[in-house]
Amino acid sequence: MKSLPSTGEKQRLLPKHFVAVVALLLILLLISVLMSLAFGSRTIGLGGLMDGLFHPSVESHEASVVRQRIARTVFGLICGAALGVSGALMQSVTRNPIADPSILGVNTGASLFVVCGIAFFSISSPSEYIWLAIIGAMLTAIFVFGIGSMGASGATPLKLVLAGAATTAILSSLVTAIQIPRMNVMDQFRFWQVGSVGSASWESVQIFIPFLVVGLVIALFVAPALNALALGDEVATGLGVRTGVVRIFAAFAGVLLCGAATALAGPIGFIGLLATHVIRLVIGPDVRFLMPLAALCGAIILVISDVVGRFLGSPGELEVGILTAFIGAPILILITMKAKMKSI
Image (tube, rainbow, N blue to C red):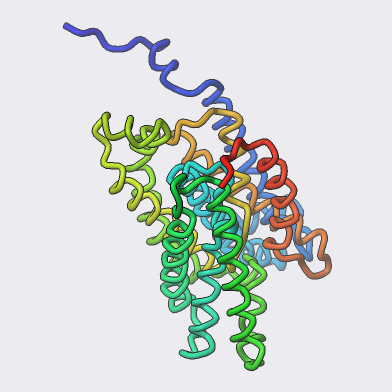
């Protein structure tokens, strides 16, 4: 009878330092949550933090402030997790080390559909934003991948980035053209366009959760097949992977997560790029472990960026989308310089 794998053999199935990385990420996650609840235009002490979290009968001003920040913190966590997984999926599907919703134009496609909804259909609620953003994100992703796949060499990383940049420029121009003659649209859209979790509410969380769950379930389901895709389509087909079906489901999950996050928080860029590369550097390319850890890392990056934005913009706040762009753009340049990309 075949013996069960020993403890040592089970441990070897995990990436190197996996347990340590998970423990570190969970500690950082806890710290970021406490920082988000404690810091802002008014700093809350430990006593007020404990009252707000664990003593609902206490009605002090500090406890009330903490309770108001809980929805924002939870929304930041799930939004960052969604963007982290979305980035991991897009990089795996395209085999492109610098794939990210913001770089491939997916965020801009969502933005265009949202501004069209505001201008032409007078939409104003998150539940209406989300469907338009997802449709816009999906159509843009299909368009960019189609343009980037033209030619004998197929969808190389450089061609996809160029297609995404060109698409982003065109769609951004359309967004501006729709806004300029409509002042009411500009006023409503400009706060959303920056990318922020400052207006998050429990309604936003409730709307987001179903999309998050569906996207994560699909992502985890296709993760083993994405590992096979990394070896090349011919090898993956030889291993019994239906490459076309896997790509469709993985791309759908990535765009679903990105579109839902963009609809409710605005186009926050570079979270998926940053989170995925940090985790890949630490534990390696195995998508089965990469995606859940990218979710944790994305949540940490977004929440901490939100906290830093409150400090830098005090007594107001600096939107998190601005901060992630400042952090992500230099890192994108470094990654691009080091990445081995094929010429057109």
